[in-house]
Image 1: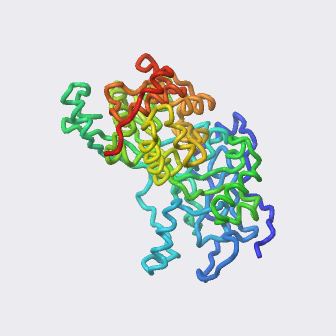
Image 2: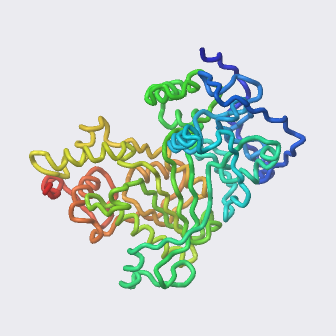
Image 3: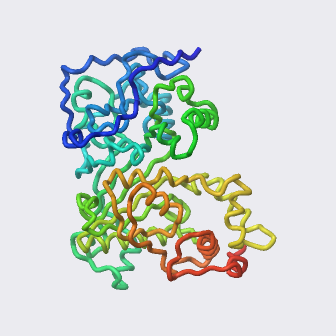
Length: 454
């Protein structure tokens, strides 16, 4: 039988922060080991409870929206810390299942604790004022990359705190960059872009961490309605959504996002320094394998090219890549929709582009861009000079949170694959920003068709 919820001081929303407190905001913790209780862990990992959280006073306080890590507290969601956990769900999202397989196969000790030596971020990101605003950052832990710095005392005491963000550097080698150099659209400078066509970037991987009261507000529903829907639609995987109303943070079993940065990340919050941004939703078929039924890869690589140019001018370029395959409906659903589009009596028409998805999935899109701008606020962004996107939904979601967008940049028509004309015509007619490059009327909507299956 599930335990009766106990109202511990866990995952409250912080009160509005005063100017004085903002001045005191810091990255490192002022706590010492002596300030903390000794953590306790279950020795018997074979013990199974109907709830993963024990209603006990040992739960670590988590005050979402607090102005510094001491007041906010760490996110704890590991299976070996049942008495301290202050979050529902598991680290690594869907990959937690693979971890379970490793444990089942005897390849991984369930009590293993990561050695986080030398894993700290390669560059500083934050803290920014937006981190203390729950309306701007509530789908990720803004301190998720600062585990060893912000929660050093808790780690030394033995608390099992895991990073939910990692920041590193990489070289990107794209054939499109080499072609852009050949056509003189890009010029190697030896810093941002070398002669071989490689670019040097900073990148951050982010796991989702949801503050449920704010998620409910964005979807115009009660927290109770949100919890019930999550509980039901995951086939009751997370009973704590119902039994532990006091726990407000949820690590959902979904993919997160990756942020790619060209130029100096420290310039991103400065409105006087140019910033180019694209927010891109995953499309494995096009992004990786080059499928020409959509504009995803050509628009993505065009945005990366624009990011390089901005960085070479002393600014920064940012691409945020969300794991939302098939409009967050999944790749199986997407392929079913492809089949329906191509097998229609009148062929693959722009007129029926969105309807085909609705017939198969019951809805046209579940990406819900209301959750998307948080990554921008995590970076401290307040103004975007060039937004490489035609999406009205993304634009509206971003500006509604207070970020100003100066210029919207559509995909150049010459980059649109022939079979993707159906997509581009349907989207522009539905409200996507085509600028001076695209103009669509009802006749074009009716007449634009993709190729048939061969």
